[in-house]
Length: 178
Length: 216
Image 1 (cartoon, rainbow over the protein chains, first blue to last red):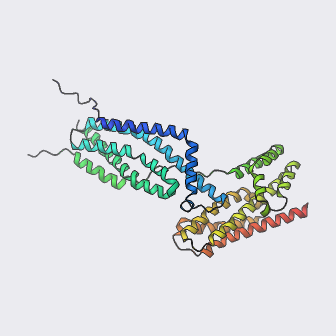
Image 2 (cartoon, chains in turn orange, red):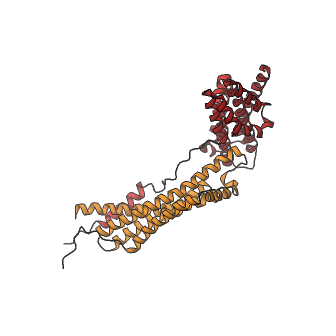
Image 3 (spheres, one colour):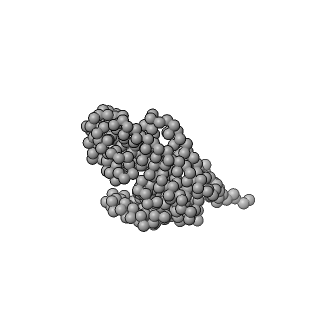
């Protein structure tokens, strides 16, 4: 029996592939839903904003309020679009980077940690945009952003960034010591 | 002799440190908002550009079917008498300067009403300094959205009014800036520039309307 070629790509664990593919599926479903229910979503968001006038700083003067509502609706829509784009992209990033990690990192805790952080961080980060968007009507632009940041973007984003730096260091090390 | 440990652990540690120090973890792409024209400002631009191109029939049609005329009717009680009829007559006569003057009066009146409304809102003593500043900022944006459309027309006819209004606007802008809101601001002081804007525009509307009556 011969030893495997060290340059052969190794598959990451199947659950990682499932998470990556699910992320892409969610992105596509979200994109299609945004197009199909654009009007309903905008109506719902506008209605919810009007029930929270103080949170949005509405003053009851059309010429002032229309701009506040317009900005919130634009950001609400942007949140959904950014979720669609990030979930699509991060699904691919998870699969690609986990494959690199599975190939270059030796079996053990380091490989499991890199793959775990990449998968959880990469798949979790886009959800922050969905959270942000969903919270805008009831919490206002800034508070919704703060909640999404501390609940999703910072923890999951940090996990992904740490794992990517770690992976970059690993790749550099393998160039130096194949 | 003890073999050196693979540098994976130290690399990971380094990555964590670099990330913690340098990574902009809180910098997320959340899009940018560019304020759009509303139906009134859009219709104004359509009419203005048609008049500039001497297409008065097109301008008249845009005026008759657009948001400008609807808004003139909705605000008829606070606008100079006969503003709508006068604008229509100027469009039919192909008198570009008079169309411009009538529209200047209309937007000056809209901005004046907003400044008065802002003053009423800022008089609310129960609101915190931050809320008052935020309310002032929103009203200022709305006032400027209308006034800046006719500032050139105002400055051509009455340069002093244009300068006085800009000064009042700048003062109000200083008070409502987020950095200025951090320090408690006397509500009376915040109201002053808005009252001045309302007074200046009121004088402009009245003077121009009187002038128009004399000329007719």
